[in-house]
Length: 109
Image (cartoon, rainbow, N blue to C red; front, side, top):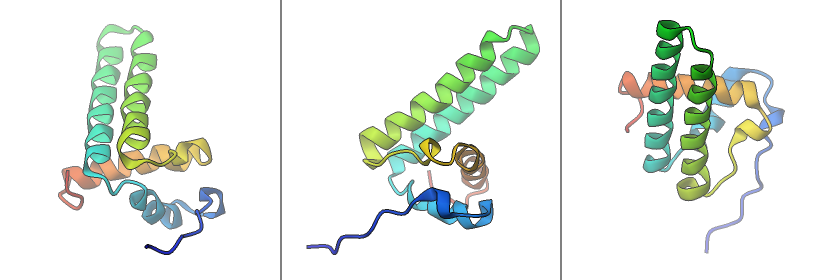
């Protein structure tokens, strides 16, 4: 039996540099990371549509795609609660840092 680990409160981190390792620890499941990647890619596509068409609905659709895919990954596969509920800005930044690190090959998809 594994020892129980006290949950970490993401609000305790003072800087994003402190938060990011915690963020990555909340994304150990490969399917969760893949869903984040798909959601972020769709979010970028929606941003491009916003710029191309000038229709602001694409901003909402893009945010919806990003969060929907991420939350499916967390609740369905990672079995944890997204840190965005307690640290929304750091979590948003963490998603894009992880997206970058996946593209750079630092994190496996």
